Image 1 (cartoon, helix red, strand yellow):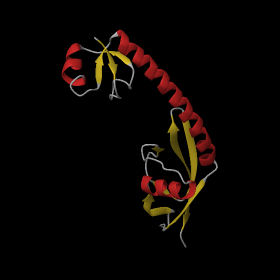
Image 2 (image 1 turned 90 degrees about the vertical axis):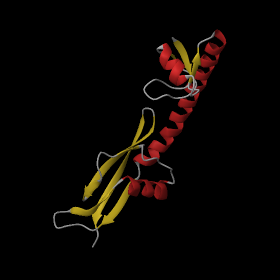
Image 3 (image 1 turned 135 degrees about the vertical axis):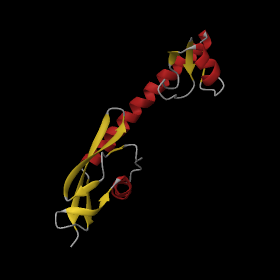
Image 4 (image 1 turned 180 degrees about the vertical axis):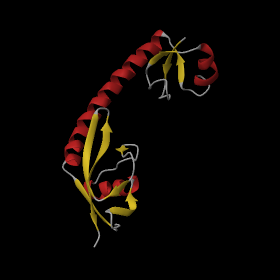
Length: 149
């Protein structure tokens, strides 16, 4: 059965996309929650217009993200932390600390889902942290960790 999504559905698609699903899934889950409706010629035109609108919004978002990318690529965040004899931190620098520093120094609101930090930073030195700004636009922020004297 062909349907048009009215909003993003995990593992299925985004708003305005035309998808083929089983009738029971549509009737029992998508339709009662208002997540989709059946395809008709009028609704198909709406979906095409919606997709064009989404493409334009994505293009503008990528342009804006490119400006922020340049700013973040040039940024270096510096942290001074207590360390052990082996140059490891007593604590760690995680997502919360990085987000706070980015908001303070770059004046940008970053969501923790945008940070690509595999594990918290626990060693002295320079580390690269990736920040996903938009689809296909990823900035690299340098994080410098120094020992507190």
